Length: 92
Image (cartoon, rainbow, N blue to C red; front, side):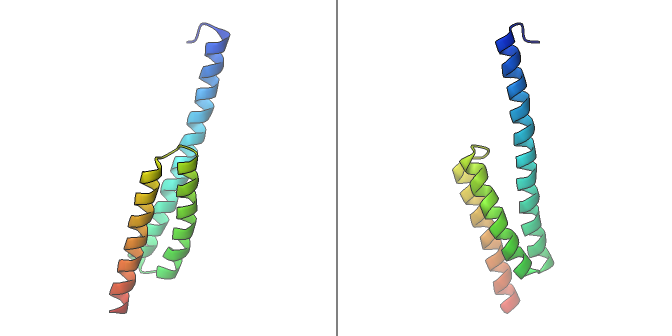
């Protein structure tokens, strides 16, 4: 336990930030799962709309230092590549 009032305040702030970050990270992962599930189910229109939402959330997470900006870019790239691959196999 913290001994000083300032240390106690930092503890409170850290707990708030941790809860906020956990919620945001969980929502982000859920959105990514929605995109992947739509691709696997063959619902490409739904996957495309979910990708737009996921891309926005990834960018926001990167802007807020929740994840690294390169991680956000890599995830967006992989999700869009999965959709494109599914579209090509559906067309063929």
